[in-house]
Image (tube, rainbow, N blue to C red; front, side, top):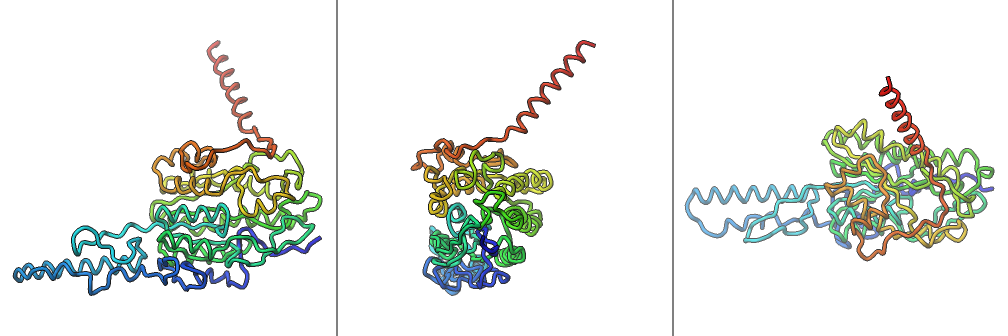
Amino acid sequence: MLGLPRGEAGSVGEASEAGEAGEASEAGEAGEASEAGSVGEAGEASEAGSVGEAGEAGEAGEASEAGEAGSVARSSRRIARCIRLREAAAFGSTTRGRAMTGQRGAVSPPLPRRVAFVTGASRGIGKSCAVFLAQQGFDVAITARTVHEGDALEHSPTVHDSDTSPLPGSLESTAAIVAAAGRTALVLPADLLDHASLEAAAARTLDSFGQIDVVVHNGRYVGPGHMDRFADTPIELIRRHLEANVLGPLVLNKIFLPAMVARGSGTIITITSAVAYADPSSAPGAGGWGMGYGVSKAALHRVAGFLEVEYGRHGVRAFNVQPGMIDAERTMIESARSGFGGWGAPPDVVGAVVAWLATHPDADRYRAQNVEAQFLCHELGLLPEWAGPTPNQAGLRYDRSAEQLRELEARLVARTNDESDEL
């Protein structure tokens, strides 16, 4: 049996100095020092701050000298434009380069900044969420274990062997795509089992951007115990599932929620799983999954309802998003030994739904509810090129406990009302 490795969970700690949470912030391209507030076009050292040379800002005043009053007015306009340009540079506005539109000298006001934080963003669902949010105008802070392509990290799902073969994807690669969309990517190595690194990543996000609008809890524990039978799983590994999959998101919520309340708005999206309300019909390795995964996802599934009750009145929204079977990179690599995979939807299904929930006014009707991502994506036509969901082949046995109790209570109420009418 293997020794217990340090956590994974779409996380990282490594020599990347997770406590400093992403000092190197490689938002543009591999190895570029994309300062946290910079915008970083792919391959360029974040020119967001150069929005129009300061001396070019006031070209409108060169037109005509129509007396002293006109000169003062033009000077005032030049100063106002320079201030707006400096603000755009300081806050990483989406107005890249010279934001000149319409007539000579006219400047478009910078769009309001929106900031998202996504865990497990090096590949799969997390990467897709980060990219789709960037395409909707969000600057994105991204966390994961894998910082660089080719990083060799333990990701075996079982205690019976080890696997450190590099997986496709990295924070570096995700950051480059975000930058290519014209947004800032703040790279924050962090480990869901290292709660201090999560606190540092959240604090760095708030320090760098000054706000938080959307948090996507996508990362999970990755490592031994995920696909092991209970008899083979040390309690320590089940504890690690709970630490990463439940307490990790709560640690982040503790830091981000006060900032959301202070601004009167915010959205927390939890990527849940059908295992939160279903039992496997087979053992791990034969189409099922380890107990630690199911137990931890079931606990996390309850968080959104509490957030709605306690924070909804402060403008904070909470959603559960159930992806369904997704053929992400790791899933496809491990499908042969796990017993499932190959019939799922692409990760972009979840990315599209998360971006819709974060931005569309109609999303409020799903507050504190479980959103079945594949069905909603298909219903709304968010990915026209995708054919739609297919029947789940995992043989899940869905839990009907709440529905059964609802039916029993309805009968009790009906019987009680009938007895009252007879009196």
